[in-house]
Length: 261
Image (cartoon, rainbow, N blue to C red; front, side, top):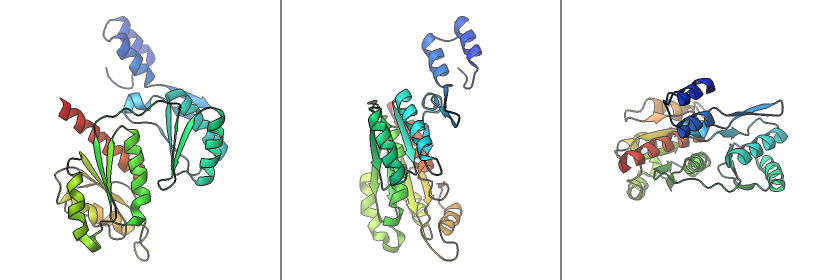
């Protein structure tokens, strides 16, 4: 069936015998929207429609609004992931979640809060490798890691392997080589993704990190360097751990599916 069909078209398709009941139900599920108060309209069908969870950005949100959105999402779909969550926001949401029998896990390094009503993550067989140039890049790497895990992937990490001590990289790569995709986080001059892409035979996603100071600091030099890479890499925005993790998981899950076939 084609995506983004109206409910009427889907039901007509089922009536005419052009799709099964299960197919029609799955597409309709992918169109689900739900209003929370007068401040939010949450997308409950993204997992069915796009193969990735709806992720709530906590940054800039009113804490009471964040709690309502996250709890409603977890109660309705089974799980909810919130990114860029401050410790204060996490404490408020966790208190509210406890009163509604929703389990929570706050991963402070990556600033990610995961809520669940007991629905587990289904393993896909996808494998994502995540590497950082320095320890200052770990916060972004951890955000990517949690997102990829929530999309069913196994994630393997190797941290603090930057170009200033490049001999650290080669032994660390060996246990990662069966990954379907590599995410490489680097600040400063952002060299490491290009180096990794010149060694491995898998897709590499470069993540510029807002580490560095002075001229072209705060990740701008890293972003420019990655965009100018002579190795073939994809590049996400500065500090975009969520985007890198979600994109890597999509690649890994497709790779795992192709291998199974």
